[in-house]
Amino acid sequence: MTVTIRDLAEKLQLSITTVSRALDGYQDVAKETRERVIRAAQEMGYEPSYAARQLRRKRSDSIGYILPTSSPQFSDPFYVDFLTGLCDEIASHHRDLLVTSCPPESEKEKSQYRQWVQSHRVDGIVINRTRLDDWRVDYLIENKIPFVSLGKAGNQSGYPYIDVKDSEGIKSLVMRLVQRGHRRIAYIGASPNLVIQADRYRGYLMGLEAAGIDLDPQLVKEGDLTEAGGYRAAQELLRLNPRPTAILGCNDLTALGVLRAAQEQGIYIGTELAITGYDGIKETQYTSPPLTTLYQPTYEIARQLARMLVQLIEGKPLSEPVISIEPQIIIRASTG
Image 1: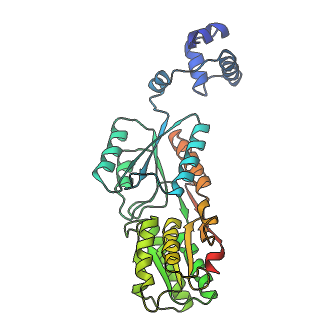
Image 2: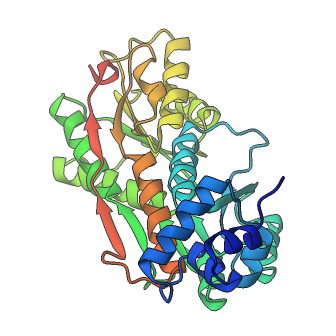
Image 3: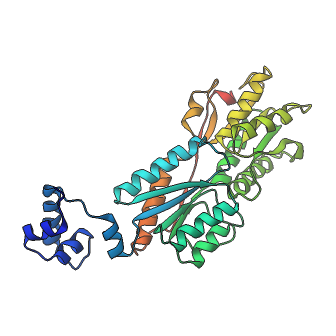
């Protein structure tokens, strides 16, 4: 038989209101009473009605995340770690994660955000792959929806986010390549509207400048953060004469595409051509040869973003509304 909140109240000889507020964590219930209610609920196997609880609290107890992808298949290992981190942290706060996917900047994406916001389907939203001109940030601020982001959008400020020091990381990676004798260093980037492209390309330019190397526009290609995009861009670069001696991918998937293109042409990776990526996905350890990369702790970043968002939803001040993280260079055989 299902245990109800009335059964719980009768056993404890408390009012239904007191039991309800104790389970919902209200501070006007004495600590001893709250602990007694929680203990009895566990012993009796009581599970609250989420619909009733959400109605009382005027909250959905859900956090939303819209995967910004145009691919019909879930293929980027970065998002595996990111979503796992969000799920694990949000579950620890007894909330649900609502996930869907939409092509970036599409009408479908805009419609999905409007639906969630106007229907109060979620209490807050996590965003990533921020853009230089990001309508999502403007829309959420305008509608007073709590949100956090991985990366700061270029058009707004004053909201919580985690900043990975992409420019500094890429600059250091370029300098490592220069120290190994490379002068023709190519870069395969991403959409020019993405903040990670702006920051990582800036780091590439900073590295060249610090090494006294002039920018060669032929060595810069636009990718799409996929393995196929990296493969296509690498084919163009490897047709140059002279070709680059090192290729830096904006992310690891791009670098994996470069690796495949070079291997098909019989180029010795690590000696004739150095290849690097960014993200530190697990797959880079098992390529042949293993891939040099800039590692960012994606899982931990996602958990931290979720913690920040829960605090915002609960009206608690953030001790650090902006958190900066330095990526770590992992040198492997793909750079010799």
